[in-house]
Image 1 (cartoon, one colour):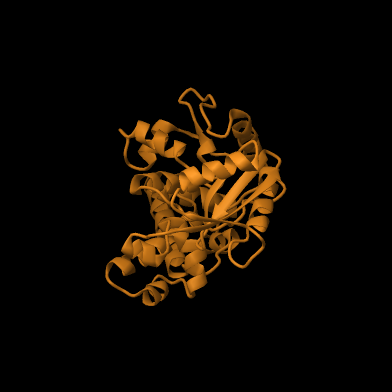
Image 2 (image 1 turned 90 degrees about the vertical axis):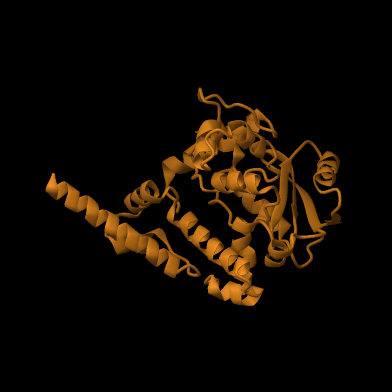
Length: 292
């Protein structure tokens, strides 16, 4: 028993040090192999142990550390440039590509509340039918499937009635063609999940739900009750379900990973056949390889 306890303590110590290393290297690209070597385990074993201890993958842990340090610096009154470097991003581009994933808005909007939007949009065909993607200069804020471009544009106007909407023409800014192609390849299980910047726009509770969904790995499915417990609001099952229903960003914010308590598919605002296709592709990816 004493030997087993010593081994457990040693493992805990190693992973606490690993977590500290991830925080210290917040602005660096850290591969599973690099992290695994630090604790002398295989990448898959390291990731399983890390997630069991900290509740998220090493990648999500690193993103959260950067985001929290950045937001804390802003709350304490730092100007935007100082906050960027205090958080360990190293450059403003890292903030707009990665910090927005957790903050859901630019530093200026985070401090001032945010007013006015200009959205660039494009509609393209995918294996799951037409998709319209729209983005601010911070990232994708809308990605939805539909039957045609006209109905999708009407839905975009309903979601952002005060925004200025610009049809995408390959101009500098959002790279919508490339992002949609990458998302389509991911759905077809031909490419890994694309690293597309997101601009999450919603209430604090909704963003908390969406960020938890973003922490789920390919092939993971949970119930609404598990989702509510995951955001430490176990009684807010209906509210969590409503936040999923309010999600504007299909696939990239993976509300399709929520099933009924009995394991049934449940609902999906873009159709159960699309939900089934997405889950089948993710199970295949999980069976065929690993990702951080």
